[in-house]
Length: 392
Image (tube, rainbow, N blue to C red):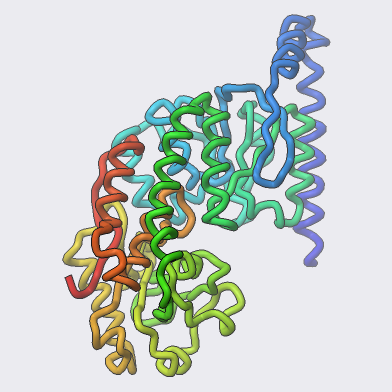
């Protein structure tokens, strides 16, 4: 029984490939020599791009029709491409609506045409549609690098290749500190916005350097921290992360000692007894918009400070937390969940560094730096709450 979904996917891939071969031949049978000649000329004009998987991919640039396998890459494509990027994106995954509705609502208010972008499903949910992608006839499909380890992804790429559609990998998640710059430069190539992409990556690197330069000179880096996804709210423990994964990497980059290291392999809920025993110096709860749980931590474009503060306060009322020094010393914080895997993750790194070493970073204002980035590079108005300190 477990083999049935794989068999179905294999048959579907073969059907899509066969459909493409048939439709590709139609212009020739119909006397469409001009179209065939045009297609040949376009392939000859393609430019090689080295993607984040190390693959050299030929892409016709600038790409006029782009499919994003992950629609959450809207953040980066909007930063580099500006308002006109919505004239380029012809299809995208369903994950923006599933996991980042705040962003979707904000962009829809400014650009109602995003509702017309074709939903191609989402790999993680098993709904990705090769047929839909091929039917859109894009110049390029952009995959997140984490897809490389998914079953059947090479077969998907092969089907797309047979249809003359190249796939390019970018990454802001697997290696959130080394990959944002090359990924953003690739986006600049795809959109023909190389100068804009360089301006963004220069700003990004300058903001990261604010933290790394000072930490390199810091002799004592011994502050312990616990970080948790606030998606499940205060009544249930959400996932924490090792320093090699997601939000946990922000602690490492911010100079802290992650109490999950050696306890949690990558991600998973902490043992409450262990947390009480470890008694971290600081606690950080991530926030976003998770409407399925009304007690979940709320941050983002449509968050309001008073209600977000009340939600964060609720976490301190968990059993035993009143004895934690982080709670007693009011070193309980919240930051936007997406700060761990977006082009503006520098704001999350700066926030963590400021919270863990307030004297060392007394003159750094991560919230204002994020606002500056947003107002300078993003095509929608800045709004909402993105980081919070309980003792403000």
